[in-house]
Length: 435
Image (tube, rainbow, N blue to C red; front, top):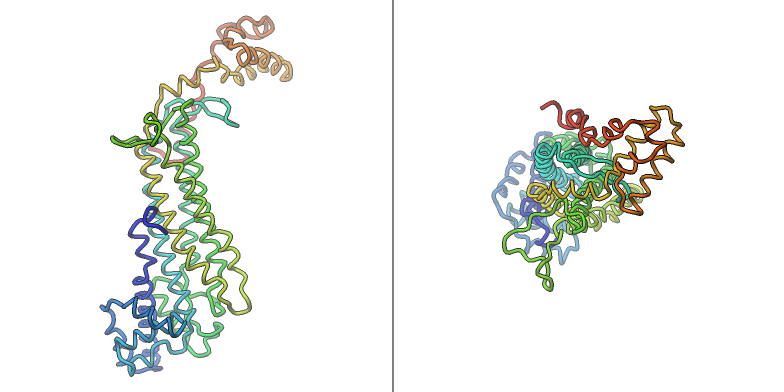
């Protein structure tokens, strides 16, 4: 992933230095377990830890791999150069490369998930703060992009909060799904290594032993993980799209913060574009790009093949680094989002009371008018607003059939905006709890 869309803590998880450090820890812990079983000398196991403070030479490992054409063997050769060939002869006893690679990959995914969970927590805090701030800020609710009925900006923030809370729960479950390790040897039968070694290594690395592996950890676990990242990315886009619509010149109910000295266009000095949320829409596409390959990795030949390997070397870092950046960017957008309540009211009034049509419809049916006739009465007056720019309330007051069913005061009472906010507190209690 390019530095433009990267943050250092997540990038560090996927660095070669981190990868080789995890490989080393797995091998060293495995040696400790083997020594405890009496398979290898305890002095030899202890000697492996001589490298615990060593910075592994990535360039040297790459140089060896250029000859061996095998990354794990290249690493083990380099480790032997550090601790000595005699001590290194007991390293990797009974293990296969996938024991190291798969367990490491899952350690990295767990660490990435922890960062992403923290990112979501920050986003949830920003969404809750803005929801409370605008709990009763009236804005136009829209369906199909068309004015429907009033809602509040607070409810908009609240529904995004509820969605992201579900995503947090999903990610926590996905983290648990990939928090397994396998040190089970070729084809996963433990023929050349005791299950105790796997249990010990997993405990040291913060994982659970995979109940049954082949030569690899089952890839349905990873498919769920990346699918969850894809869902989170789609939720990011959902929020970004709403902000982009709100920032349109004809709407302008909210906009991204425009900092001093910022430029919106190389050609048009007046421009203030929703560049951050447009960027988030694009980043969401990149994260979702990992989902289908992860699904396709589930089906491997027999006990293993490496068709999954090249895929995971790319989607592991790319999807998590991109999502980490996107969540942080969205948190900043929400935190600084500029909201225009006056524009919200102005937009609501553009069609002169049409948004109250359902209340009038329901009142007519309560007055004894059939629903079909009531709908026709309301619609014919509403169409005059659409087509002639009339005032909905005045048209209703001047309609003899409507007046026959409803008095003037009753008709006017149906145009009260506060009617639409009477259950806001109930919804907030559901989303945030009683506060």
